[in-house]
Image (cartoon, rainbow, N blue to C red; front, side, top):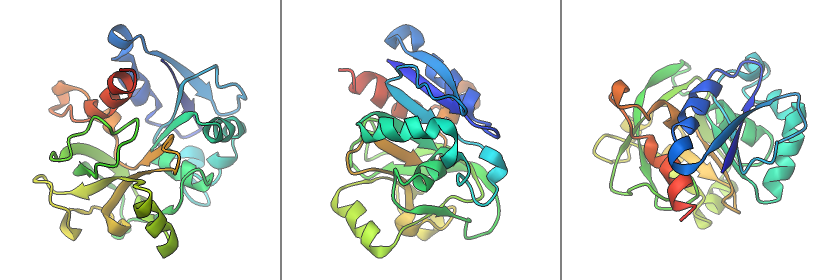
Amino acid sequence: MKCGVVVFPGSNCDHDMIDTLNLFKDKHGVEVVELWHKDHDLKNCDVIFLPGGFSYGDYLRSGAIARFSPIMKEVIEFANNGGKVVGICNGFQILCEAHLLPGALLHNNSHRFICKNVHLKSTGANSFFTSGLDTNKAYKIPIAHGEGRYHADEASLKELEANNQVLLKYCDESGNISDEANPNGSIQHIAGICNKDRNVIGMMPHPERAVDPALANSDGVAFFTSLFELELA
């Protein structure tokens, strides 16, 4: 499987993602390439990752300028043709700005940048990036964002629920979903969603930062296992 990581001006998690994907190189034959934002070639990648960071300095609003980067024309066409796309943090914001995912990411209800470990729970709505998650487990995954509060209008929320497009919700370490466990005020505690066709995924937390036991956290491995093991089985 060939994975492309798009690099925008201001991306700061691109190499975190590249290093994580390379962990699966020997066992699963994963090939990883960087995709510069000015390029028009996705280099025949099977999966495209839009990493976290502060693309274009988050001017106007997060992801609003990156959505018009030259390579996004190809990413949108790729996604509309069924290609797999994953947006993490700023990548999630970009996917919403590009209307590949519904809703928007607003300022945290605290109006502060938050950088800490939180817990996530799978809703059981499987996707190529979450199908390996245990619905009974609370996954400890870092967040690092100032505009991570997911919001959508009532009609969009009903559609998300009806189509099982909500993939992840914030919870406490015991798996309880509550306002107290919601770090940014996201509506219905939503941490990650997918599109109707389930080939485009966005999530605010950073699983690529939770793959190394040396950091006392490898809960993020399950997300990549979903992609490289279960999807290829």
